[in-house]
Image (cartoon, rainbow, N blue to C red; front, top):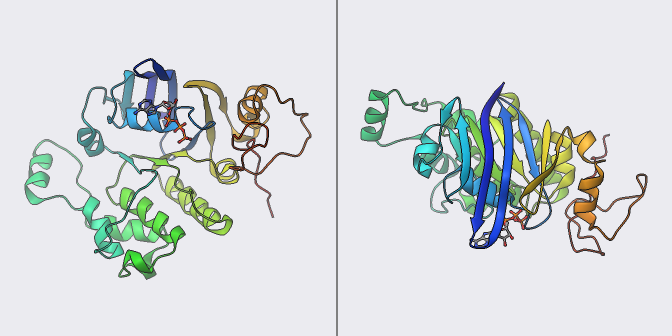
Length: 276
Ligand SMILES: Nc1ncnc2c1ncn2[C@@H]1O[C@H](COP(=O)(O)OP(=O)(O)OP(=O)(O)O)[C@@H](O)[C@H]1O
């Protein structure tokens, strides 16, 4: 059953219709990928559902209407997100970075509990470190971490707030293949443990390999949705990624995910990862 429901979401920046009538569902523990060429509206979607930009339509979490709520109120109800350029607090250890989201000031906690709001338990930080495989780095400072580890800490920090869903905006950007694969394994573990994920990324090996369901945007509209195996063969998706002028036979080799097509400069057609 759908836990996160978005209905007919629309966003316009002046005359630019960045999103039009986008509907999307995420079930508990489901990992849904939101993909599309550059400028398709993916970040705008996350900005809109998290309340950072005004939008038409409706956003619902666990049956509660979030539409019109400010970002902090949506976060309090369990909607977390990461940013494309999410930075860690460099003066804090990994554990302390997680505590920033996990621990609320006493008065906020008391106020929230009075009105029945969720309060993350003390184990939230330890659980997030374990799920992301970061226990051995708990006392490290961000300067000591690799790029891949920093991304894992960013996800752990969102997870430490015990959200119902995390929207991840390009978490694999800048990672090498091995780091991206490790991130994928950890994201799958987060979802399998019950936290829903909405994953935006241009790394098609990652997206195709771990997502349960994909939604594809082009020019702010949904052009395809379904399981990865079906979406990757959808003619509208192939055209969106390669450009309308390029006709690609079904069995033709495809460029790697994220590699610009020479014809269009757009990222490669979604391709399934190789399985070993
Ligand atoms: N603040 C803004 N003001 C005006 N136009 C904007 C603004 N933010 C985004 N846009 C436009 O909205 C459209 C969608 O942009 P968005 O960043 O959501 O796409 P995206 O799919 O996330 O792209 P990318 O994969 O490159 O990150 C684009 O045409 C973009 O130029």
